[in-house]
Length: 213
Image 1 (cartoon, rainbow, N blue to C red):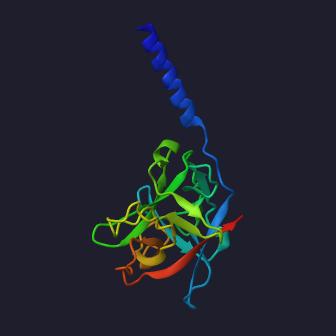
Image 2: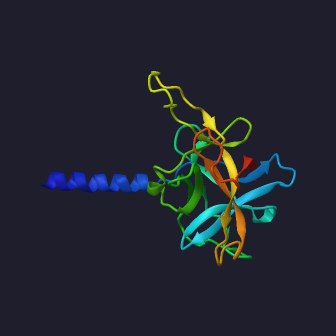
Image 3: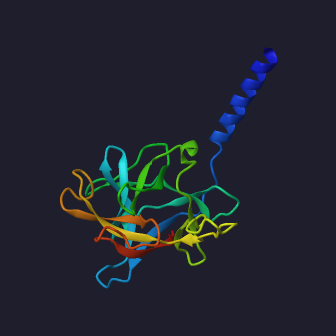
């Protein structure tokens, strides 16, 4: 019994130590959004509150409002990890300081009935970040997501790797009282699932570039 209790205690200590160990951090950067549309100037990503502790990523053309991001790396590669920030975020017409001790992490959240997925943003512990979307940075400093295996032809073994994908779009979303826009539509960063065009007609193809601070 004493041995079992000791092993349980040591296991608890080890688990706590691992959980307390900070994940390696990339250099800080902004996310710069550009499109081929002549009407769209360079913009930057920042969180936008859509409900109680629920956020999406909206756009600003003011660099001083741009959120500073980092990748919490999950492998030996410094270019793969969870997209996080503890920087101030915009909840109204003023910049509000985020006082939580937890990092905010981004994940791609698919929607039933649409091939347009929204990027949601919420406070996550190191343990809770496991299972979220893993982002990458390619050689051209573009933000990517690992496409995984191509399952369009189930007869091909081993399956073909889809590579690092850049299916970024900006789409219109309804404003939220107390958020960036209290009325009307705002632009939010989105991801299109699969090779088809976005089912939301408001979506515009964009590139998301990592701009080191």
